[in-house]
Amino acid sequence: MLKKLPLHFYDRKDVVHIARELIGKIIVTKFGGIITSGRIAETEAYIALTDKASHSFGGRRTSRNEHMYAAPGTAYVYICYGMHQMLNVVTNAKDIPDAILIRAIEPIEGIETMLQRAGKTKADFTLTKGPGNVGKALGIFKDHSGTILSGDEIYIAEDRYKIKKDEIGVSARIGVESAGADALLPYRFYLRGNKYVSRNNK
DNA sequence: CCGGGGATTATCT
DNA sequence: GATAATCCCCGGC
Image (tube, rainbow, N blue to C red; front, side, top):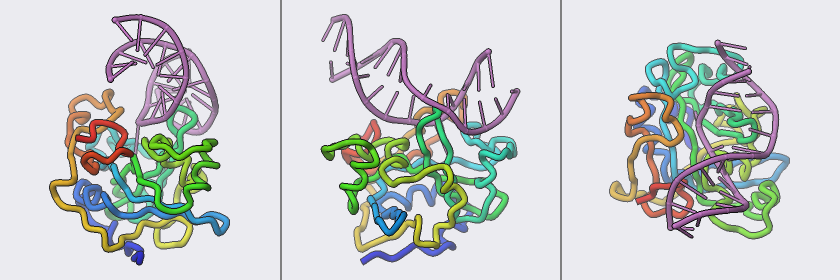
């Protein structure tokens, strides 16, 4: 019993709070009639303008990060290290480039398809562990950047599953060492003990 | 088990 | 030409 999150879910000012709320929600993609989905196990918040780790730090606006400035509830996809498709969710008002990086999911539907996309034959925890693998398993490519999450291609939904407060861990973000003091901000959220969480899952 | 480094290319300077 | 919000293998302990 899935209920798609409405666009106003994303249309709020506190991106860190939304990143925490996304833990336990279900992300679904449907390309060419094929559905793949997974429960979100790890997220990171990136804050517009003031956050040195964000692509939009200081108001930087280029053709790559243009979609960070789009309306809340838009997907922002970019390529990292020339090979990893990174899926982000844009929040806050249009022209305020807050975003949330989906770092890990727990596969639910379409596991066979995810294995094919990843070029694997056997399901293991590396399938959807880490942001690059999430994009690969869900079939996300940078062309999907700008997709609105109220449609049927990419969206986030919730079911009856409830996350208890003490199941959510908080830490500094990963892979943003070059951001100086901002690298220490507690903007990463994850499901404690979940095997799909990229690391430090205590 | 852990740490180091190579892969691989879009993007920005 | 350097860099990047990463991943995974491999060698060493």
